[in-house]
Length: 302
Image: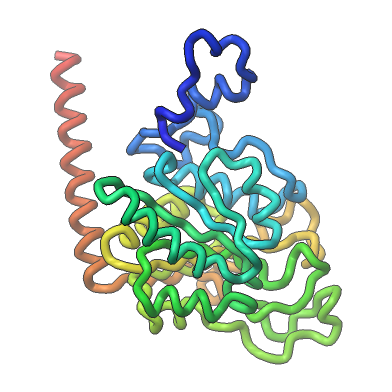
């Protein structure tokens, strides 16, 4: 999805659907400072979705898509699950992989894009649920990290199989009882953030999606670090309110409860030394950019 590719020929503009006209005129493609605050004021890269009312995954999708630094040159790789119901509504190139092999697809895709577009930044972002990431696809997830593939993996951690009846997943809490796990899980939640760190990821974050400014920060960090250094991993709690017995208005509170200091989704972050240097460099450049912009505005108002 490039700026040129979505441009409408002037003689055809008036017969194009109004939604497409709006996308071309008001989307944030090409805006380096785009972020979650553009939601509701600029054309979103996701306008509608088919998820349940109040689903935290819909919040996460909006924040992530709004935070992509380079959406016109980003390809997202999804997998079977609730996320696959949303990608048809997304204004970004995306690939639907077989269940669990999303990191293998992303590995080949990132390498092919690097060869095909040697002078152009092409970001690849994997987005899948806990079943595709830690259960069915764990081998391919780990192998991508072992090989230091330069893309970001994002796991929507529902702590169960949300779209097939509520079966137990490796990321489910110990003892949790679900519709199709009636006796409760017998072992602890798999510590995938720790595994990611030990498997070579340079940036690892474990958190909920209750704070859009935080999601913007970690998504951008993860993508920039993956571009330059190596694999990054975000594990985001997006509870399936339907399967855990909550109503449509309780998803946000569920996430806030899970991110308390003693809870399993208290904010945790790991940054490798090369990634710390890159973040410091990016922070310095951003300060310079803002200072230059402030000086320019002051000159205009003088």
